[in-house]
Structures are given as structure tokens and as C-alpha cells.
Figure 1: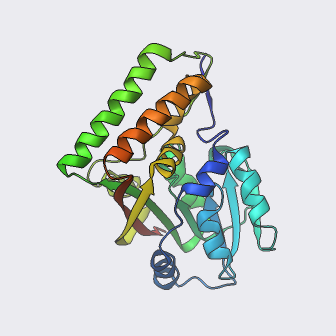
Figure 2 (figure 1 turned 90 degrees about the horizontal axis):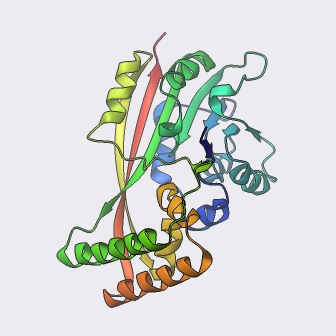
Length: 273
């Protein structure tokens, strides 16, 4: 039987270094539109290295995180030493049993809800929330540059990756990294929420953030994408080094950086009693 290792195992530090935090306006909108106060209990599903956790903790909120990955949780715990009101359990959310039937005022999940079992996640969140509580979900997806030069650059990068996979990739059938690109077709996320019949959408808000990465930063970003990390898992160090150098040459040939926009989508939903 093929086992699925944690998607960010071994790459958590790079993830924490290169992945963006969330727009401050997004966090402020959550607080304003849900009306949560500092005395309320927040449950975070999949906090990772604490990008969103820190943004709420800095404002004085109590947050209990449920994190699957040991590597991610180690960084999260270290970052949250100064926040007495932040606690973390390392366990899959589907298996987490909670403490003394505690109910939460808000459950939120940043960039991770797509990893969870759809047959469990909505029902479990519904049970964990107080009446009138909120389930808040947010993600970002890249809006890549669709100019001719950008497409040419990406095609060249794809060709380089395929070349090294074809000549050097070694499959490990006993251990594969869990993969999910997090991308949904036009509002499948909303359809999933509605189909649960357990939550009603209060508001959906979108935010746009421009990013600009040089060749080294681009490679770090790609390393934190589980699907690409799985490719790296199957290559030896020399192949990875050679592939990276070829990708850098292409990026430098096209101006030395990769520019794109990140589209953040925030879904504020309320528990149906």
C-alpha cells in the first residue's frame, strides 16, 4: 500500500521564509464582519508555520491550532512562544477529538481547507462551533502574467523540468508526498459550502497582491508547492542543481524576475442552527 507523507515535510522552513502572509485588510475584515472579540475562542485548522496565526495573536486573540505536519508545527510553536494564548495540537483535524466538548466562536482555515476530507470537515466544524458561530475560509491563487513573453518563459521552464524528470526521476512507490494544487474551477469552493447545508455565506471578498520574485526566490516558491516538491523528491542533488541553474538562466534571459498577482478569496460563513 502506498503511504502519503506530509505534503510539506522537509520544506516547512522554506515555506515559512518565502510564502506571503495575508493582507492586513483581510484580517481586519474578518474581525469586523464576524464581530469577534478578544474574549472569544478561535480554532485554526491547518495553521502551518503560523502565517495567519501570528496576525490574530498580535491582536490579542486566543487561538488553538490543529496542525497535521510535525515540521510545520515545530516552526509554529517556536514563533508563538511569546503568545500565551496560542496553543497547538499536532494531529489530523479529522482525528482530533477536542477538549471537554469545548465550542468555539470562530473556526478559520487559511490555505488548507482543501486538504481535508469533505465528508468530515463541514459536519465537524458545525459541531465545534457555538450557535451563531462563524466558519471563515480563505485562500490565494496566483494570477500569472499571460503576456507572450511570460508564456514563452514558462514553456521553457516546463520543458527543462520535463527533461530532468524523463532522464533522472526515480519513483518511490512506497512513499509519495500528498499533492493538491489548491486550485478550483469557478467557484467550486462556494458550491461546496452551499452543498454542505450547514453554513450560509455571509460575504465573499477578494483582494489582490502583486508579487515579484527573482530567480532564487522563484525556485524557493516552487519548492514549497507539493506537486513540484514531489518532483524534487525523485531527483538527486546534482540533477536538482543542474535543473535549477537552467531555470535561472531562462528567468534571467527574460528580465531576471517573475511577476504575478495573488488573488486572495475570503469566505465568511455562519453556522446554520
